Structures are given as structure tokens and as C-alpha cells.
Image (cartoon, helix red, strand yellow):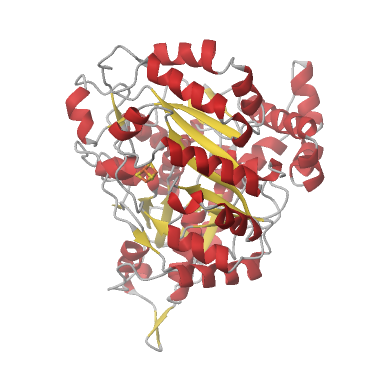
Length: 530
Ligand code: SF4
């Protein structure tokens, strides 16, 4: 089987989804190859020869190798100006590399000026015209090469001491290789290129079966109006964790929620744009709180499945020994108190960061210091609002006194706080938004980084039915419903408030300036020296 992580997403750490699938397949003796087409595709565009018509682009193209080296060098992260310049120059090269396409590409984004990733007809168009995709020159060479390598040796499955070649894999395809290609589609910025690659594989390798899963596919399939528009193009779509369904496809049954240790072994180690290897790890899927009204996890009713903390610690120990990371990125929607205690009691020996809920554990200053000693470099905290009424309406389960104490404790312990705020929720008006501003100003010393988001109404949440206007604002695969704000506090008004009032406040602008451009929270822990 070939597993692919498609472009475009931030190329700073290996893709966790395909590593988990690889772990599940390898544990059952099913050979698979993993392709980080995102990293390879972006690098191929950055490094291709190109001419430039303006001074900035000329300089950026000329310095691309030294800027890539700088982003992989820890010393660059001691000098934010140097880092910022290198990031912006690399991004500039990417933008320029596809100027003949009607699209915009950067280190964290890809969007087409005419084709939408949430319109199934546009995705089908991308599949029918793969040569119109900016990554075509990359994948038209790389895919045949890796498919040849992957499928020239029929895989052997071993289980129960027996070794077999499953008939599903060996089905002959008139001279074409047969087998499975799995693609992990997580972000909208990956969708158009994913379908261009699928179209190419379909055309050139008709004997292969294509399986599509990942976070974005899960969200699409959980929509109340979901009807599969990709029949005939994609053989199987998978919602939720893909390990069990994939193994079933390959003839291994009864996997359920069996624990899987990710396998990063076939992904590159040195080429990601970070000052060393970042090891991503999920101690759970879903969310143990699962109540916030604005959250897709709640709206999609994704089940909470934790890895038992002792198993997670064993995983981390073995993955750290194998990959020698400089940072562990915990991908949990919210690190559970039990997992956090395990990390505090048994430091993994490498700095780590991730999302945590603002809860009573962190009101204990000694415990925060213990976390710091365990390597906790930064916690991402969904505060959302500085108004208690809004937090209650959002069913956030947070009270502002606790939030205040947690921020002070983390600051005193030397743990950076990356605080997420959400504006424009149905109950909010400008008065509540101003309370959020007041809260941030009052805690400015303890907030290291800020993320400001404007509310989107999840299409499958119960509130969508209450407020929606009946039209999806972009396409049949839109994850969000158009909604009319009950108090007129719409996106335009919120944006104006953020630009004119919120971001201009000196206490806020100083925090916003800390944020690493483009890579934001993925690189923030490297700048959080306390
Ligand atoms: S804590 Fe975070 S992930 Fe969990 S339901 Fe709330 S917003 Fe969603």
C-alpha cells in the first residue's frame, strides 16, 4: 500500500495521520510506503529554476537554499528578524513559483482563484485536469516512481504466524500494478491537489484502488447533507480513524480501537523546515470535554478515544528514542488531565507542547512548575472570550477567575501561553468583545501569543438550524452554514472591531508581534524562552 500526505500544508513536521496508518499496517506485517508529497512537492517548487521581475523575488530566489538552511538551524530562532525574513522570503519563492497558474500558494496555504475546495464539481474538474495543477510537474514524475517501487513487490501479510498474500491486493489489472493508495486529506488547502493526484493515478494506474480519509473527509461525511459525489473516482471514503477500515480492506478484521504506535520510519528526518525534528503524537482522538457549542468535534459527535496514559508514555519513549526530536507536538484536541499528570510525573526528556483546557489542575502553582520541569514549553489554551456570559453560552466550562489564575501560574512557572480567542459567536456583541479586550489587557504579561478567530457556524451543529439562512455560502462541501447574527455582529463588524480597536491596543499589538509569521503556533515554542 502507498500512503500519501498531499500538498499543501505547513512543511515543519512529519504528517501524523499517515504515520499512524503506517504503524497499524506494519504492526500486522503489511508492507507500505509513505510519501510526504506535501514536503517533497513544496521543496520541488521552491528549488525549481525561476526568473523574477522584482527585486524582492529575485533576492528570495537567489537565497532560497540559504533561507531553507536557516529555517533548519536553531541559531536562526535566536534572532527573530532573521527568522521572519527567511520565512517571508521562502514564502515569496513559493508564491512566484506558480505565477502562471490562477492560484496562490504559500507555506501554509493553497487556493485557486476559480476552483473551490468545497465545491465537488471543482474537485472533479481538478481530477479531470491534473496537468492544470501547479504540483503536476512534481507528481507526474514522483508518483510513477514511488508506485513502481511500492507495487513491484507484492506485499506479504503475516498474522497468527502465517504469511499470506491477500487476494484483494493481488487482483491483476491487465499489466498495471494493483494495490491500494491511501490519501490523508486534512485541510482545505490540500483538497484540489489531492483530487488532481487522484485523477492522475486513475488515468495512469487504473488497476489501483484509491482510499481517501483524513480530518476533512471526516467532516464532509458527517455533514447532514452528505451525498458521496466522488463515486467512480474514489473507491472508498473513510470517516474517522482509518486504521480499522484500512486493515479490513486488506483482509485483516476485528481491529476496532486497537492501540497503534505511529511509524515515522519511512518519512524524511532532516528536511522539514524546523530547527530539528518535531515529533507529533496524539494521546487521544476526539475531545474529553466535547461540549463547546461552536466546536466541530462536538457538532460532528466524534467519539473520545484516549490512549491509556501509560501506553502513551511508552509510545513517546520509543518514538523519542527512534527519532531524536527537539520538540514533541501533542496533537490532542485537549490533553487530558491523566495524560498531563503522566507527563509531569515521567518527563519525556524532550520539550513538549499542546492544547490543554483551562481547568482546576493548572490553578496549582506547584503543579505548573512540575509541568515546566517535565519539559512543557508552551500550552495552547482556548479561552475564546473574556466575558463569562459568553463562555457559559458556549458551554466552554471555564470560569474567568480560573483562567486568570491559570495564566498567572503558567507565566510564573515559565510556560508560554498561546491563547485562542473567538469573536462573533451568536451571543456576542461589541460590549462582550470589549470585555475580552479588557481581559487580555489585564493579563498581557501572562499571554505570550494570541490567535484571533472569527466564528463560523459548523454545518452539522444544532445551532446551525436555529440561525442559518438556508444557503451554504461556498459550495456543497462547505463545513459551515451561512448564518445571520441575531445582533448584527457579523463578520464585517467583527473584523472592523479587531482591526481598528482590538489589534491596535498597545498591550495586544505587542503580543501579536510575538507570533512567528506563517508557521504561528507550530514554531512558537521555539521562541518561548522563559
Ligand atoms: S475543549 Fe476544545 S476540542 Fe473540546 S469541545 Fe471544546 S473547543 Fe472542542
